[in-house]
Image (cartoon, rainbow, N blue to C red; front, side, top):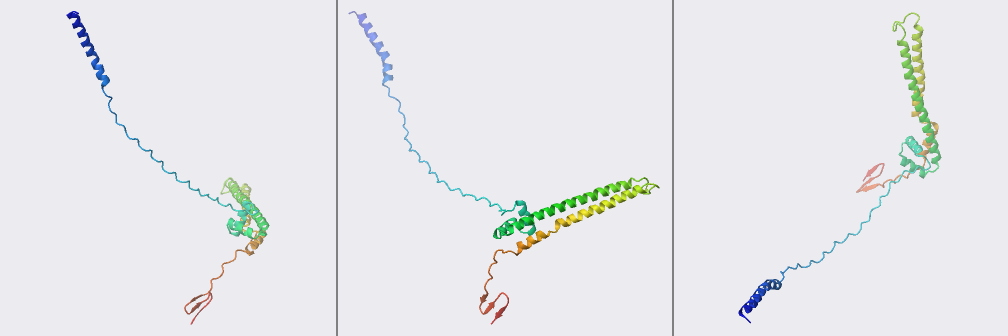
Length: 223
């Protein structure tokens, strides 16, 4: 083996060793260390509070109409001066008053309705007649110094105003009185309502004895 051949083999071996060294270094290098975080324990969920019972709201008790319509109950309440609730309780305690109260309530509503119509019609006639009569009078030729031959027109205006005044007041005044004054049937029902049994009154307090003084509801004696 010649010297050149030996040198060539040595050179190839040297260069082969140089190429393999970096790869071996990379292969032998250890992996970088990683910090492992400790596992946190699971947090317990907060306890769910028990459901609170929802209070039931009792609806307001409607007024019992005890056989009367709302309009009849209100009309009879206006007649007696009591509230509809008090009237309802009173009729419940004394059922015999129910037909009397219903009849009186119908009579009251009819009376007041008729009186209102009479008052409205009377004041309407009074107002319209007064306006028409005034127009007739002021349009008479020569008014206020009436010309000869036109006196009749002026007196027609006066007659219209006077007649409308009489008719209007003749309807309006009785209508107002009819609205304000209860009828006989209403008065009888009111007497039956007020004279019937009501709630028993509270018992009177017994006499108080203080020391040597006797106190009675009417007089007092001291020893």
